Image (cartoon, rainbow, N blue to C red; front, side):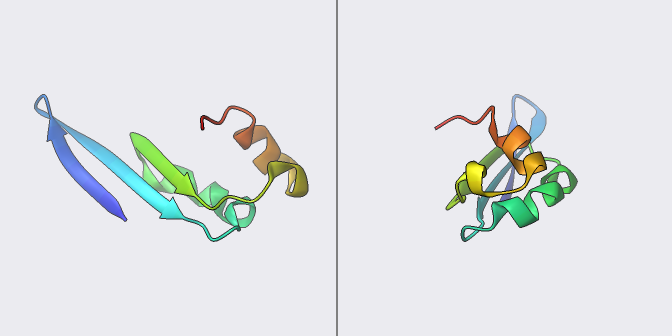
Length: 62
């Protein structure tokens, strides 16, 4: 789900994505979403996924 919102005269894009435990296969698509804020639910454990996904997830915030 993507929401566009005006904040201080500028557009802000917020995306929430339930990746159903498969973000490791889908995360490369995130750049195409061009988000300001991305909220991802139901990610798998990065230790059990690809090296690219592990690198991306190494700077996550809970």
